[in-house]
Amino acid sequence: MENIGLIIAVAVVVIVLLWLLFYFVPVGLWFKALLSGVRISLLQLILMRWRKVPATLIVNEMITGTKAGLHLNPNELEAHYLAKGNVPNVIQALVSAQKANINLDFKMASAIDLAGRNVFEAVQMSVNPKVINTPPVSAVAKNGIQLIAKARVTVRANIKQLVGGAGEETVLARVGEGIVSSIGSAESHTVVLENPDYISRVVLEKGLDAGTAFEILSIDIADIDVGKNIGAELQIDQANADKNIAQAKAEEKRAMAVAHEQENKAKAQEARAKVILAEAEIPLAIAEAFRSGNLGIMDYYRLQNVQADTQMRESIAKPEKK
Image (cartoon, rainbow, N blue to C red; front, side, top):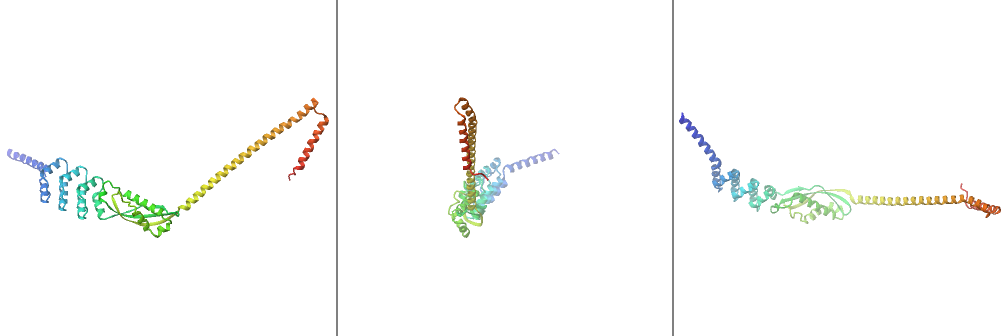
């Protein structure tokens, strides 16, 4: 019985050792790579395990690339994985680029991938151009009529500009700016409606794809709608503004005239008050003249007659109010 227990213990130890051996020494994966024509050392596969790099992923992608005719370096694939790159995506992009006769090497593909762009999608877009629909763009011709245009922009990826090149948003913004400029330079909106290709021609001549990750192949005007008469609305608004200014100035003059009239009335009332005060002092002056002997009774009667004549003349000069 002791021999049987010893044999079982030895067998368990052997199994554990074999499992550890095949875990850290991927002999099966190395043999698979060897049969597929991929030259990679067993030591390098062991070191990948220690560096926590999935050796199976690296080997499978190397097999895919080698079968497609690519010359890959396992160290470059491992370095790209450690840099948080998408190794399968890069290999797919390289295979697709080779089949489509697009000049793309591993260095450029990995740089594009690490820049945050989908390099495989970019290669596909180089083969099959992409159509981007612009949002409605409003512009006003020289005659004041608003036009609302929609365009379809056909682009393909520019592999050399994918690193550091502007994206779709920049292309759409530049196309929109070109549409506004071309419509704004037209003498009449009818010219644009009769020849929509005028917009496409003017926009394409501006070289809007410079500095972007795309190459503009064509710009097609999908739809043009006539909007408001902006020129007429601006004239109406200007006329209303001028009217309001004129009314304000007239109101200011009227207020000044009313204020001036009130000031004159105040001055006239002040003058009448002074006259009344002066007239109130006349009897006192006459009485004082009687007391001092400077005015006699006959002089007083003559003064009364003069006042009576003056009042009669004033009544004759002023017609009676009916």
